[in-house]
Image (cartoon, rainbow, N blue to C red; front, side, top):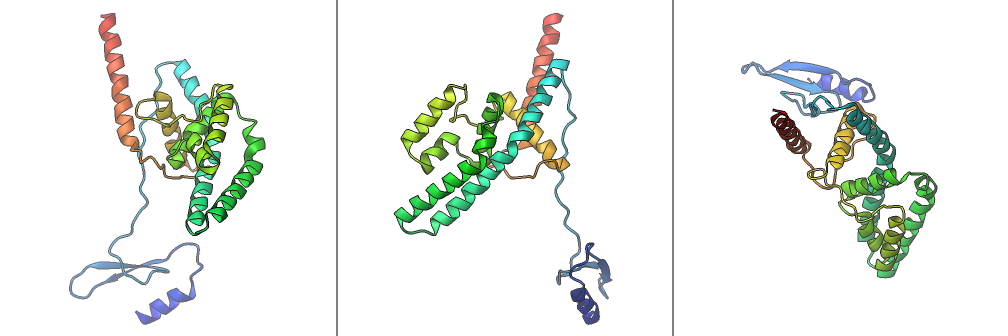
Amino acid sequence: MKRLFAILLMFPTLIFAQVEEKERDSIGEHYIIIEGDSIPRTAIDLDEVMLLHKLEFDSREDRRTYLILKRKTIKVYPYAKLAAERLETLNKRLEKMESKRQRKKYAKRIQKYIEGEFSDELKKLTRTEGQILIKLIHRQTGKTTFELIKELRNGWRAFWFNNTAKMFKISLKKEFDPMYVKEDYLIEDILQRNFQSGRLETQKSALGLDFFELTEKWLGESEKTASNETSNRN
């Protein structure tokens, strides 16, 4: 056993973990030793896999709408994910600063950095892409874009930016509400499918969403609608 442990320590950089079973003398129970882990296990933990329902559309137009929404969501999601990461980093560092002046100065520096890094790219977004981004920022951070601007700048700036956005029919106060807004549910569906395929990097929602609960709700609504349409035709 000591020799085996010593050999495992000599090869920490192997790409694939070597697994060896050891049988306990009297009990007959098998233990597994995974390279790099000194604790014997009776089982290997596997990553959770979400089983998604099959996509079905009532019409060609519904399918087309979903595909357009998919393209736009995949395009803007990385910006929302990055916004959440920047906000988390900002808050952690601000917590360590005791001086109010120091905190304000640092927040302003981060704000300028974010604007300088992404402003040119964000200007290229269409109105619908911009509104999806606003929703996803709320999904990832738990706060609306209006609230974030108000925190990082001041209330007047938030009011100004919101009025400017209204010129393009975009509300910075828009929330992500997949339980009651079907488009938001479809966006969540798109995210979950692309998380699973690896096309998008998973980032947990700050809203504590339960996708299975959402799906059950909306599939139930679809079944009710179909049943009512059938009854009306009869």
